[in-house]
Image 1 (tube, rainbow over the protein chains, first blue to last red):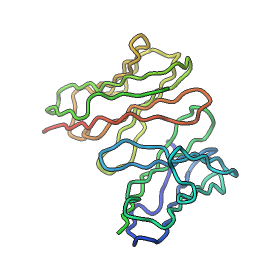
Image 2: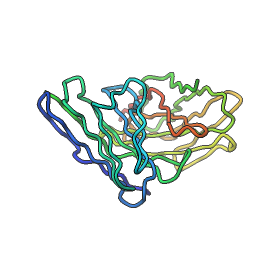
Image 3: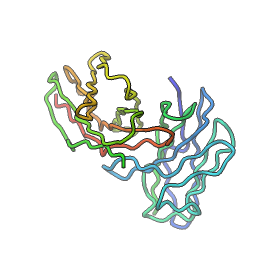
Length: 116
Length: 114
């Protein structure tokens, strides 16, 4: 099956610093990548949708200047949490889709971010 | 508006028992997709199944089976002869039309007791 990786798997940082999370599709070209956030014991909430070579589309309530998304190639998308604060501590999960519409999304293993 | 409801927040059963996880959705779309994902304690989401709205056939995969009923807008998931390794959070999800998004239910935390 399709494999999606994320790096790092876990990161601890000080408040005010920026953190970059990478999402890679390893064995397929991802037309679209999605970024989700999951707080403890809660569901996944979509943050943004990114298509290769174009600007990401952010969900309502998600600050685009705080969560910078770059989808520079068909196999790599990055999420940068700028000036992170403790309330940004969460589990960030990316997913990648090869086609369009409702093709299956394949999820990365997630990145646990802890902001001190 | 589209909505996915997983009414069971948490379920505990003893190993080898069968267990059914409920999923009810709301939509006005005629073309849509339904998904089930498993999230074990490690956190990684595991894809289990994708079903489109035109295919109401039930599906069986090993100990897993799915019952899709458009009449009741339900897409229930049954694990037969449950095992401890089945312990996880299970998410039902919905996607429709040109919209790329998948909407996740709140998940059902399943505990299989030895």
